[in-house]
Image (cartoon, rainbow, N blue to C red):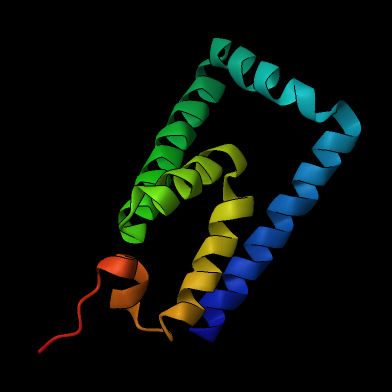
Length: 115
């Protein structure tokens, strides 16, 4: 579990550093324009489509494991809007709350202790 957490932290740092560089170089307001315009290039369109569905899957999983829409929907939206900057941190916190139990990590509030 420590290796998994360490990899998540490294991934989070990489995403945050690359994002900070992009914001510094081009500004945050250009992110949507770049993303949408990339659909005109076949390989970038493939990557962005794959990435978009991955974000939707991650958001759905986060919303599901929260059990209530009051927490699930905002967390799912953050997963879509912030990508790995939110998702990796969310998963690290989930590993600690679940005390490393993968069933609890995957199911979150929906996990029920076996009888």
